[in-house]
Image (cartoon, rainbow, N blue to C red; front, side, top):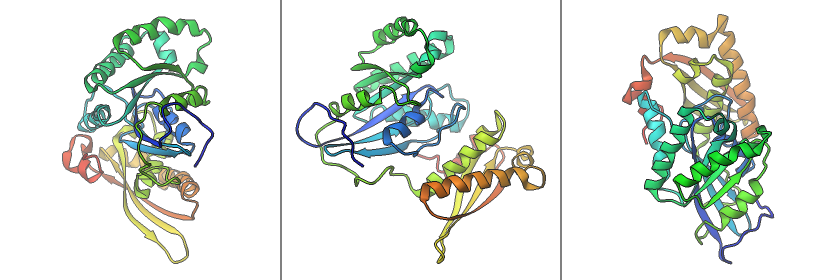
Length: 312
């Protein structure tokens, strides 16, 4: 993939890692997809959609960036939540540049919880000592931009951000400028991935995420947070069809009939929507078999979390 984005910072090829962090539901996954130019991370209107690191890769003629999407940093209540927060905080010290994403309408609302979470993230950022950009997202939803200035000044006073950039991850506003400034902050290094690679995540992981996206979209407010998806088998059949056998894990016995639905109607709808999206991503025909299994209390069970891949 190539583009006409140019940047300062030397004639040598540049490559580096860029961590995307912030509170839940500030638009991190939407930004990752916009930066990469393809959907590599699921994104929904609900918080805590992202549970793991998702790396999106984009390559230009003279530089390559590996953007690392992370779970929203929040007050953890379960072992799974703790895993998610540890992953995000750990990323701060492992990248060359950090994007701290904040939500413009939430800044104006001045909610104490939001402000405390942003300040907690900034304290982690100070400990990591990694250069950072403050990205004020969703500015397209703010009519009077002047209302943002006091909070931007407050956050800028808490940390020496290298840049403060207003953006709209959904619309792409400010993204070209963001990329130009990013290139100049990455070290001179040859590319680490082939130019046509979009992510380093295996196809099994991406397929499971697309199924989980449908669980989030089609189930109620709380139930999706008690579900997980595991791909048990992946078969490449002679006719070119990929057969995927996956299990939806639920946290309580009472959850299973809700996910399955009357006469299997809900799990069938989730399976159909998931299959269409996986086929679009793989550009191949898919056979998808979904089963539902109860794993009591899996959110706080280290053994089950490891089985599901939450063991980094």
